[in-house]
Structure formats: structure tokens, C-alpha cells
Length: 250
Image (tube, rainbow, N blue to C red):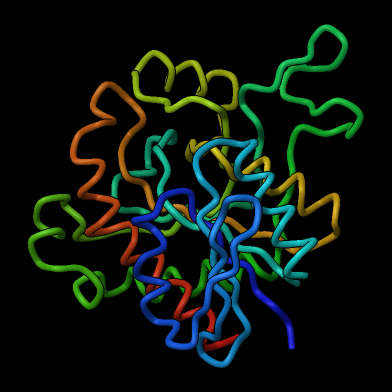
């Protein structure tokens, strides 16, 4: 049976998932607790990657080497960059770029040296299945979120987007930074701090990878507003619902 790896950067994004794995047990490797169990009849390993590209790459490598996962999904929150990527929307990556990778003039900006590419594509079939699951969940947000969260964050008509997500080792939280990223990578939908590194590791190992991110803010001067509450009351619940919907139909 295939083993599925699930990663999130923050503890709050994992708590709801671990709660639905009744036979979950923990294996500690490289200072990380890997939750091993079953979900909707599938073998699943769930882990907190910690924040940033290096931490995420370390965690992904352990999942692939020690736990032999056959597919890996990263879920959590991201800042919106595209004009139509609004708070409460979900972005499923079709590709990821390290926006802070710059080995020029030896290599073009954003290109990872010796890989001959800047964009690391996700697995098309896996990403499409997760996008379908996200669309199903977002068709009725009230089923998964409390009425107060829907009202407070104006989540009446959330949408699913598919496209480019960019990653870097800084929390993008100013309008100037956001605009600079949009100029440099105009088709980027969202920004976060881990996904592109995990995509690179999965390419190295030939393992299917997908990333699903809920837009928590607009990555601008107001990016810090209610971030913790959004993760707890919206992003974590969407992660649980989307993954559950996907696994039920896998």
C-alpha cells in the first residue's frame, strides 16, 4: 500500500489532522516527531516541518529516506500576491520557485545552480485531485468553519486557484516586498517559506509532490493582522477538510 506524507510548517496546521488518526504513534527522527498512522484506510505519515526552506528540506528528506513515502503533500497558509488571490482562497501549486535564489551572473536569477531550472513543477494528477477536493470543500465553507470566522474574515465566496507559488526565507509582510515579487515573478499567485525546497527534494527522489495553501493575508503592510487566529480557525480547518476529502476518494 502506498504511504502518503503530509507536511505543515506550523503546529497549529497539524493538530486537527493528528486528531483524526486514532492509531497514530510517533517516531522521533532528526528532532522531529513523525506521526505514523492511518486515515481513511491509507498509510499516512504526518510531520511538522518547521519554518523555512532548510528545515522543510530536511524534513522532506527524512520522509523519503526513513519512511519511504510514495507521495508528499504540503499544506498550510500563504500570503496572496495575485490581485484575485484573496484571503480565504486556496491555491494549489502547479509549480514553485525560490524567489530569493540569485546566483547571477553565473546563473539566471531564480535558477537553481546545476538544475537548469527555476521552476519545480508539482505532480499534475496529484495536484488536480487536491484542487477538486478543495473546490468541494470551498463550495460550502460553513460546513467546515464557524459562522464567526466566516463573518470576521469575509469568507462568503472563497475560490480555488492553480498556478505558481513562490518560496523564500523571509516572511513577506510589506507592500513594497509584495510589489517587488509581483514585478519579478508576475504570474505568482502566493508566497510562503517552504514549498519550493520540498519540490526540489521530491524531484531529486522522483516522488510526486503537491502543495495546497490557504491565503491568510495579502502579504502587505497588514500581513500580520489576525494571522494566528486565521491559522487556527480557517487554514487548519481547510487543510483537514481538503485532505480528508482527497483521501476519501483516493
